[in-house]
Amino acid sequence: MEGGARVHGALLDAGLVDRVELFVAPRILADAAAPSFAAGRGKDAMRDAWELRDVQLRTRGPDVWWSGRPVAGGASHSPDEGDSLGPRLSFETDEG
Image (cartoon, rainbow, N blue to C red):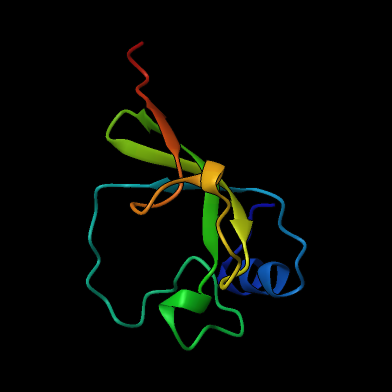
């Protein structure tokens, strides 16, 4: 679902998100008042943050597209879901 930060945050909080598709442009606003991707209940610690699993990265021109399955923070890793460096991911460019 395409939406703003409040919609994204509410859907994550309700556990209604199966997959995240996120485009990141190589731009920096540096504005503390700029909206974030998701404005939900928030987490107090990084260990409790939402984590993307089965991550795929692709480039689209200068932009990067992230796709992954969100898992609530604190979920344990199984050995096939990554190593000490994090979950496995795949990467491809739009050039091939």
